[in-house]
Length: 210
View (tube, rainbow, N blue to C red):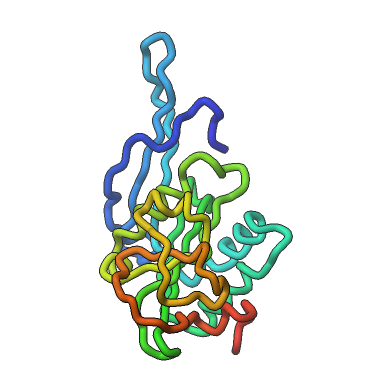
């Protein structure tokens, strides 16, 4: 568990690319502890940001259930997206192979079948690690990763929070879960065509269709 006197991540460097897919393209983050009497200790926390793989689904479900308790919709949603082979991209933040944070991007559609970008949802941080900046770091890093970086990204959430990543409220397209678009935002979207944006069908119930 992260010591209370450690600051948020203050040093980051690209991790090496090992041979297995689970850790390829990882980003290694080091959080250095404060100095004591002018001497920096050698203790540090090593955080690894990497793409999720199929073997991670159990840990992801557990994290989502903890972060969104008592709701189990989010874990059922991600399980359904994975089992049904949807086109998703998702990342983890770990410390010593312990899952701390998670973010998922799924396809956004125009008129039901035409991909136009990505939906950012869900994003979660283990309860005892919340309010330490790790969720923000995970979002910021993954928004810059291929193929997310080359397309519009949509999110339904707190405008005050997501504005820090460059998201802004939009009038079009309409969100089926927020018809007033009061909390619907986009990044890298400039269109003004009026339509109802589409989600993968798992968002309608979170259940796997297998």
